[in-house]
Length: 320
Ligand SMILES: [Cu+2]
Image (cartoon, rainbow, N blue to C red; front, side, top):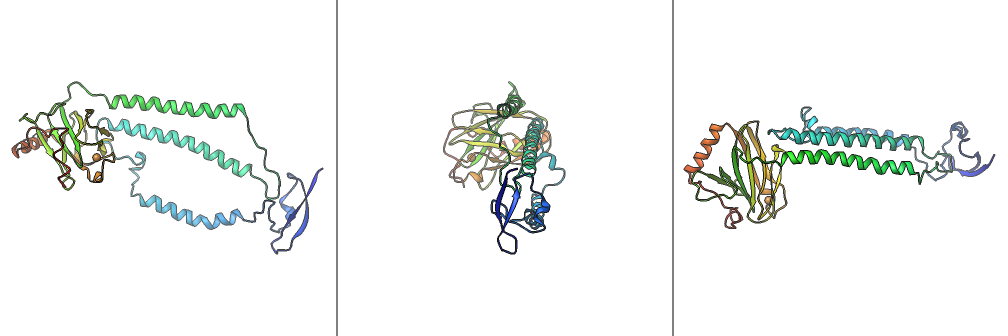
């Protein structure tokens, strides 16, 4: 049998020659309770390091788990807010499904990594590295094909849900023309794709960065948002609606929702659009139809009938 000679150093510091059998023959008892430097020069004790780090890791985990402020009810939504529209649950399911797929892949990969680290590491007293696997065609074909299948399945569900979420009906119950400008929003109610400032039946509300506007919507009625911008690209995001869309100058983007839960929610611009982008906030109020009608009547009574036109740069950036 081939034998090799290596230099080892006991803990008391005095070097000492020791003849060991080649790998596989080396047994734990052969070190006779002495701590030796491994052939690659490492004398760290992984167990001792792990024991020292364990309380720190536990404390960090505790801080992360408690600092998020999430309750057990929030956990299944994995960071998304509660859906308050008919379309919201579809987005939530997509989100949860993607996480489950990612976790399955993650657990498999972590398992393989930990398994290799534990069972295929170089022995402390060995000199040879474990057998290396390369140019294995079946394995390489597998790890090329499997990600393509995963991405294709995810793509199918994304395309299917996106088609549904961006579908607009020919005659929704309400139109709201949302005008984005630097740096706030205007909401034109009961208007058509091209808001008509002369239409006295319509109503509008307009905000400033200091005084965020509120978008009122009737509960359980379908509203179509028609998004226009007067300057740069913004992004209209009523957070709890789980839907956002770019607001692009010269383009009318649309999407439709049916709010199902009455309440007050927050909205914001989701596209970095300039220095005061972070102040492009708005509120959303989902109310009964009677309250919605009353609010529109109040706006008209204040003289806010007609519409804030899109594409006119005379309002907004000066209104800080
Ligand atoms: Cu913006």
